[in-house]
Image 1: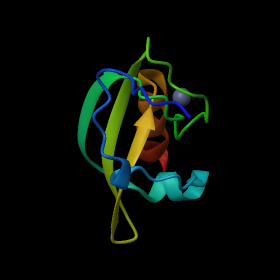
Image 2: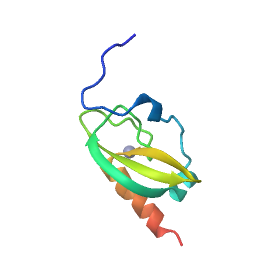
Image 3: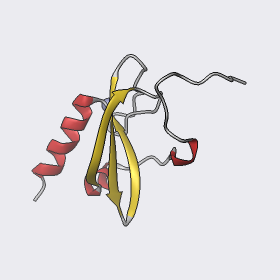
Length: 89
Ligand SMILES: [Zn+2]
């Protein structure tokens, strides 16, 4: 067992969601508040690649089907996500 936690990662375990959103679900997610910080070892919801603790991670609180979900993105993936959302319709 690993007993040590990475410094700077204060996300409560109860809020950690392991749901993998489909591309369609991601497009339907409505972005709300967001934070920037160091990666917490969570995978990016856009490219599925882990955001390492040496990289910047954007955490986005999004509404999806009446639920609030936390999304993690690389900065470039956040931009790509917003662009893909804006492009529809
Ligand atoms: Zn990414």
